[in-house]
Image (cartoon, rainbow, N blue to C red; front, side):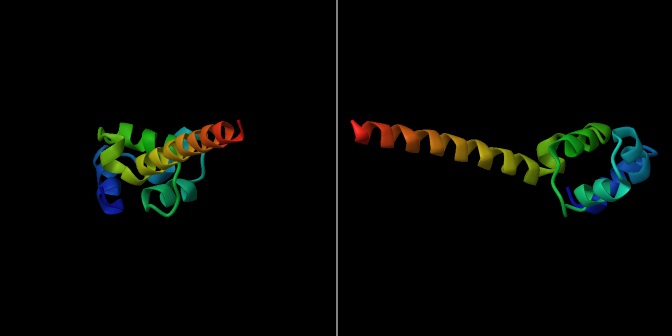
Length: 89
C-alpha cells in the first residue's frame, strides 16, 4: 500500500497519526515516518496493519523483506561457519 492509502485507511476508521502514536507510546513523527516508508519498525507496522485490517505483507512489504533478509543472512553465516569448521579438520 502507498502511504496515501494507509493514511486514508486510518482516517476512514477515525484514527490519526497522533492517536496511533499516543496509543503506542511513540512520537507522531515516528509513526509518520513508518507510514511514509521513511523508517521501518515492525511493531509499528504490525499495529497499523492491524488497525486498518490489512495483512502486514500488503501494507508494509518492506518490513517483511527486511525480516527475510536478516533470516537469510543468519542462515548464510551459520553455513559459512559450518564450512570453515569442516575445512579446519
